[in-house]
Length: 175
Image 1 (cartoon, rainbow, N blue to C red):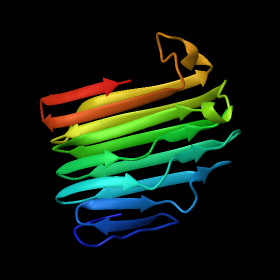
Image 2: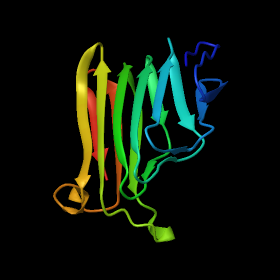
Image 3: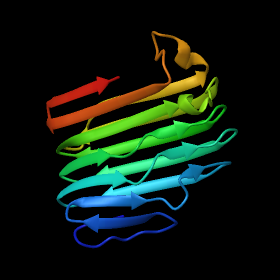
């Protein structure tokens, strides 16, 4: 998808542009089997990117997701990825910006629905570049039941917020 007043898209994703905000509408909120999802957003100015719902990753799946955002200021505020038990996913997130906020969230299972996540294989790599130089490289990984280790994660969810104010002024929060 490209902005500057025009949205170009390929594939099943839809997007709506309202001012500086792109709302991504995925007609299939659940990814299964060997699905591949690619999201590219490019803007010459400031952009806010949101979506309409959680991205659910089904059990016994092997999903690949590639995300790339380019712009002067990007605020990337998507809903969490929700992983069902025994799901697998390889996620790559790359952002090229001058300033902005990237929010990523991962939820393992649906505790309130008594759908427990006990094992899976997930690797999500986030790279954030400022002025063409790698500023942040972060990895979220689940291998089997490794997330249960309190030194690694210790709970069923992770929220990562990356705030970039300028080239050498940034903050990373993980909860």
